[in-house]
Length: 169
Image 1 (cartoon, rainbow, N blue to C red):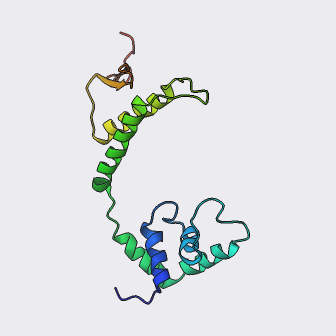
Image 2: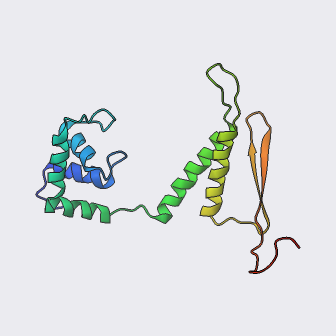
Image 3: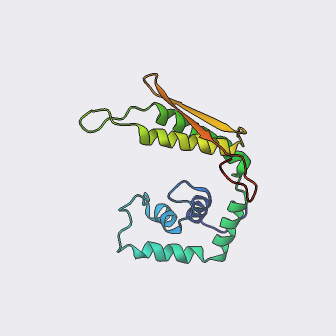
């Protein structure tokens, strides 16, 4: 690439276009990281650090910076086909962790894992939506606990009703 950008400006563009959270798409945090060695953590940006925001804004309005960021964004390879396996992996991990985790309070007493089980059920639901898994009449979702017990949810999916039909026959 034949660019007139400095090394720090190029780094700014790369982090802005494809960096990790909380930097990606946040000019002020990217500028603070690259030019002022700020970590991006809460507390790094005090109200008196208005200069960073102004400097970031000044950089973002430059035509060469905009062009470089657009160029980098056009190379983005994340789309539905590349994101689906990553989402599946994360959702499966959530299901595994939330369905077997034993929760305790600050007094080391076991507490109800219902909230976590609900998260697992929602993750299962998202996976079934992603992959178009649907039975005609009912879904059964089973979550096994760490102690060998478990919960089975029967989700009933009613047939589509014709307009004007009564629900009760």
